[in-house]
Length: 207
Image 1 (cartoon, one colour):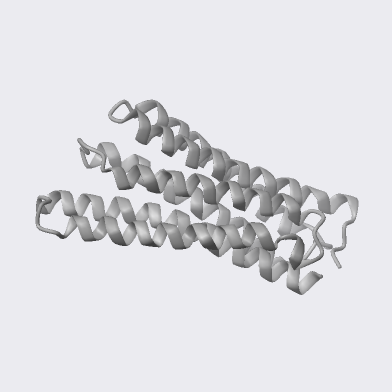
Image 2: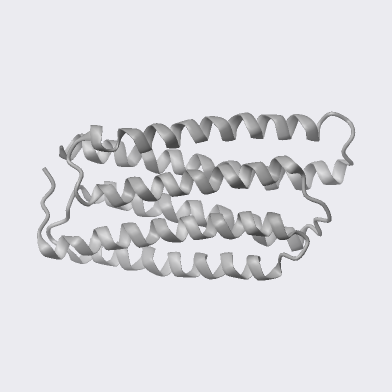
């Protein structure tokens, strides 16, 4: 059972705030795709989210180092915090490359994948919020299943996108650009599943 001493609630606040930054980053990326080529404002908003998430990550890890009693194992807290931060980092790395690579068009499958990412981060955020009171895996099961489902959808979309890149109709330089852009998007979606797996392990260990 979780040791929910009052001071431990700070960790849960940090987890939840981090997950909200993941949702906001994904939403800004989706808006970037909808607004393309007018993207500069959305790139900056994503950058702002990444900076805020980094600050929260540092606070969480500093508290982890200073706190004697934690709500669950330290290595699990470390993995959870860094896992959420990695999702945001992938989104930020992706957004910055639009200008670096002089992207001049946007495939429909990319827009579709940004929708999947938003749904995955929303499901993840819901799972993180439930962690504060959850002691049974059954209380997280529906959102964890949804995260896994969305990761599978994202895999299928990514395979289709990469297949289109190599069908001979895309210029070699664009193939290089878009393969990397799709990979960052896939990393972010996969990251949601990774964090979901961490949450599942935490609940199983502490139930």
